[in-house]
Length: 98
Image: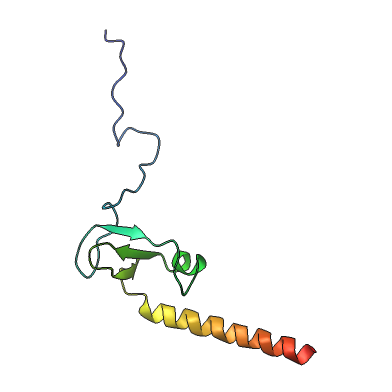
């Protein structure tokens, strides 16, 4: 009888395996798996990339939605227009109150 426990592999480990660079979803433009989650952008801060499941390919720099694997360009425009509209309404309400 061998007293040593069996080795722990990725299939038997009770802990989730961390996502390593190169282990992300394939890029729809160049098919590279060298993608990573985007944490911050100029247009959406920290909230925008989370809302759009934004990934960025390290090979061709293409940004895409992790779930749909499509470009987020149109969604960025909509996001910015909505934020601009809400900002203008708030400014109008503040100015009309005084």
